[in-house]
Amino acid sequence: MNAELGAGFGWFGSTRNYLGDPQKAPGSMRWQEGYAKYGLNGSTDKLIAGSVYGGFSLLSSGTWGDGDTGAITAGNERRTAVEDAFLGWRSGDLVPALGQDGVDFSFGRQLVTVDGFLITDDGFNPGNAFSPIEGVRDGRFNRGGAFYLGQRLAFGNTAVLKLGGKDGLHGSLIWLKSDNPGQSKTEVAAATVDYTTPLGSIGSTYVRGLDVEERYAFGDRLERKGMNIYSLRGQGNAGIESADFAFEVARQEKRSGSQRAMFFDAGYTFADVKWQPTVSYRYSRYSEGWDFLFQGGFRKRYQGEIATNYAGSVTSNMRINDVLLSVRPTDTLTLNAMAFDYHQLSRKQERDFSAREVDLFLDWMVTDNITLSPLIGFYKPEKWLGNGGLQSGSASTNTYMQFIVWVTF
Image 1 (cartoon, helix red, strand yellow):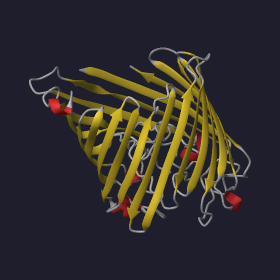
Image 2 (tube, rainbow, N blue to C red):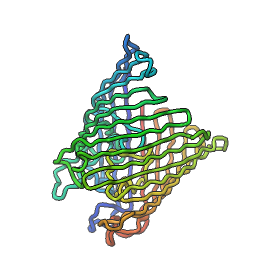
Image 3 (cartoon, rainbow, N blue to C red):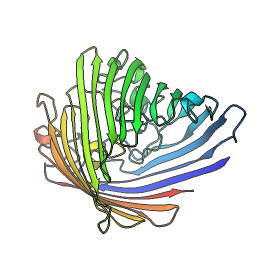
Image 4 (cartoon, rainbow, N blue to C red):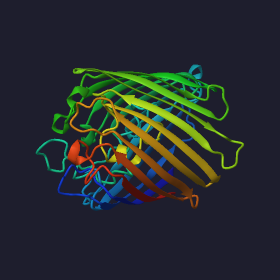
């Protein structure tokens, strides 16, 4: 049995806001976020028939100050609640045909991630300011703040069966029930099949929308019930040492019609060069009515700090090009620069979120337990609140800053 403790605290500031309130201009805002996760996890030694594992944890979170610049939190959120509560069983060598631990079944409240970008986690953490239903200001979507740090990742209830281990042919059957009001408490079933070799993997995901809670439904969320999603994906180095490739193409079938989304990225690390620079490029595209479901960053790579978190939708009706440059002066310090170009596909919508963004940030592991992550970002929209965009004051460049301290034990 192992004790788990993780915490983070961040200071944030933005010279512009995206509240959609013409009275708050130019809209400079300052706020803070924090969380602490604490609990136990572990597994049994090998039993006669496999091994049992599980975990239980609590998570406390809050937001202070003005609330975030995207009208998600108000600065008065506080919450402590169960985060993880799950049990699982692995088969060990009980089923030789499926390999070591070729059967893995778990259930309960836990983080579930599917390769690709359809199901990353349940990490959307709105607060009291989030009110997507007109006339509703009762805090029903409040999940405890800490929107950016976003460590409430576990789905409320799950059942996951994995078959075949991690190499060769393998797959999974998944049932997820979110207890997140910001996700309309969506329930889905999913199946995956993958084939993995030393060169990489190719796979497919199918997701079926089972239900949503109407009390929390907004936008096109009611269409999640009965929705079907099909995707083909892959990742690996294709036999090129120090290279990295990934792609996914997906199609949604829902009552209003078919929607499509895709991404492709390619990267290379110059392992023999000083500081081991990494360069990568990513292209992504979403059709006008694409539903982002439980999507996070592509392979934990954000689609822009300001655009993704605060400045409007970048996961529907959008084409995005971005470039990453990363260097490692030491084993404990990584310097990163990212540049994004967002182009809205259809201009029929009420708001135009076309923009450009540059983010400069570093990750410095000060000790084995403490990491510092400062960031500065610059966001230049084509439109502002006065002429069809969302940014307050004007369409001039917004400067955004954050400083986060991460602690793990």
